[in-house]
Image (tube, rainbow, N blue to C red; front, side, top):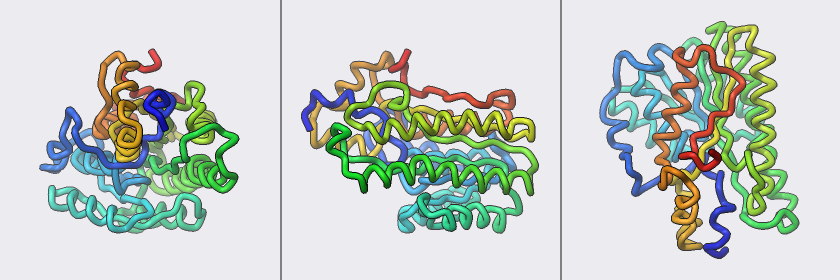
Length: 286
């Protein structure tokens, strides 16, 4: 994969770790506040083992939420959970496969079992695809991306809405989309297509559950310094630099910056916001 292909790799940034950012994760994990943006809210976070999901778990706990972290890799979940607890936050974790309906329902049920309610959910987990033209993508890879990135959030939202309805009575859900859902994405066609479909599913859920007081939004991150992107840049040097050249702010985001947008949308300060896809892209699609 050549450096010239870099600008077509936008969007696969949901679920990885980061280094070298302009903001440090340590500042987000040193203390847990007793009063914050999400104080008192029980929040489920999928894809929480690394990257944006892990940053969100740390931030949400610092902002006063009780969090349940869900992802497929237990070692990563355990590490983030212990970090949150050491900082004074309330957290637990559960292994969850978004492609497995029973696993998704079990994670939602676990949050209610642990904390007595569900107020909010950040559906961040996703599967990537091998970059390349769509005729070179295997059917197995296509099926996996669709199962995790579209069916997964559909399953999660169904279970989350039921839990919010039965316990908190009103709440908020945020799905992680991608700036790649808002443009042609020749190198990541299946990924971009599932994220575009997720935007539509988000809007439909917002219209359906708004009358019950359940808000549903999505965020569309731009270039984000996740493990996945750093690996691409290692294979194709200059990828991140090229993407940054297309971004008015001139740099990539730290996962913590994406998490901040999700936290606001889940909070009561966004009480009149639903059905939107919030670009967090440094102006890339301005």
